[in-house]
Image 1 (tube, rainbow, N blue to C red):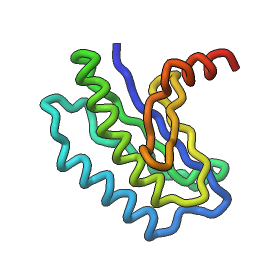
Image 2: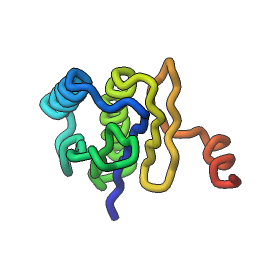
Image 3: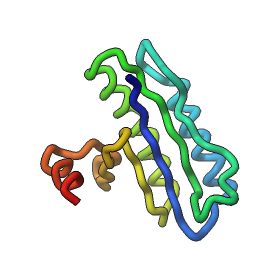
Length: 125
């Protein structure tokens, strides 16, 4: 069974050329510095979002399934990448999930997994 991170940002203003260039540079930096032994795929960014209802950034990244510790270490690594991109793309509304779990954006910590209490609240809504 495989797991993945899914991410999408929306806003009225389209992605600028500078934002697109810098977001790709951030992604490439994390891909080239990947510190783990097993990589399923690089940080995925979908192209051709022009016709997608205000979606300015979208993608997914499959995660290795070789144990929970490694899975969450790798997920958190890619979430650091996504946090940098989130700070770059101002005024966007984000939806980020680990499969069906909604992840939390904290201004100090960046993207993170919900606490048990936050997760229970998500599932009760």
